[in-house]
Amino acid sequence: MTKKLKILVVAGDGIGPEVTGEAVRVLQSVAEEGGHEFTFREEPIGGVAIQGQGSPLPKVTLEAALASDAVLLGAVGGNEFNALPPSERPEAGLLQLRNALGGFANLRPSFAWPGLSANSPLRPEVVEGADILFVRELLGGLYFGEPRQWDRAKGAAWNTMRYTRDEVVRVAKVAFELASKRGKKLTSVDKANVLEVSQLWRAAVTEVAKDYPDVAVEHQYVDAMAMHLMNRPRDFDVVLTENLFGDILSDEAAVITGSLGMLPSATIGGKVNLYEPVHGSAPDIAGKGIANPLGAILTAAMVLRYSAGLEDEAQAIEAAVKQVLAQGARTADLARGDKSVKVLSTPEVGAKVLEALGSRTGAAAR
Ligand code: IPM
Ligand code: MN
Image (cartoon, rainbow, N blue to C red; front, side, top):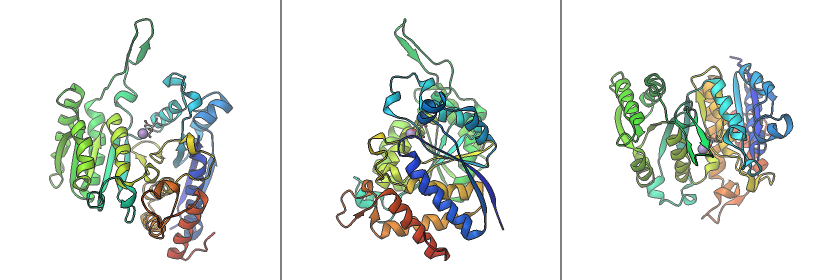
């Protein structure tokens, strides 16, 4: 069946445009091959929008996002904005966009891709087979809690980690649903030995757990979890976290894969789903054509899975990525510790994925 999808592309800063370009090419090829109608519109966000339009989230971008079926983001941020207060930085544009789109469940799969274990500083026998899905709450906690302020006169600053029971319940339900379709195990992360907000979190998760008797639940303190993730990543299936804990642990989980450049994400549950690779704008390598596009390409697969209902096509992309990795053709971030790797540029890796995808589906490669 023909699928129609209006995709807003907000490539943003740094390596954002480079990696997003490859993701868009993959989506275009899937559309062409399957006779789907995907349209792409581009608008600025983040630092480029501050420089061009005077705001990290211009009104046209926000309106285009709300009028789309899916938003594909590259990255935001840059060193030239480091002196600005949080509310004026490129990151504020992304946070405003997340809030406006309303998606509260940020899915961040972290997968030990076959053949990449040499790239991880962890021993192969520790990482091989790891397959974790982080469900990070995205609209609450310290990121959005009030009050927040840096009172310079007082020499004090504060942020607020705030959750309501309902905010925890709705994201917990998403996590339990996913767990019941995967490994039937859910680890909820909190700091309930210190924080009231974590005690509420744990109580709400325990409440939701009653409706999912087939899912085994455990609660871990975030400090211990940071260690378990490195010691025994294969023991985890779905990991449910509040906003900041999930931000931190999902970067840590990149160690399992061997590069932050491999991790995709999808944010669901709101008006419009938002798709973004986990990595940042990486100003140090921006414009050099060496960034890893696979996180963005795997994010494109999530667009197909969660916004287009094209599960087979999503899996075809993931299989194509697997195939390209097996060929030993990779960007520089994936070459560590492996002399047999042929280091390729961003567009070269993108082209390899298209080629692998074409040979799987019969489409002519670019
Ligand atoms: C992420 C990023 C963002 C976050 C920043 C850019 C606002 O680190 O998506 O993980 O902290 O959520
Ligand atoms: Mn982050």
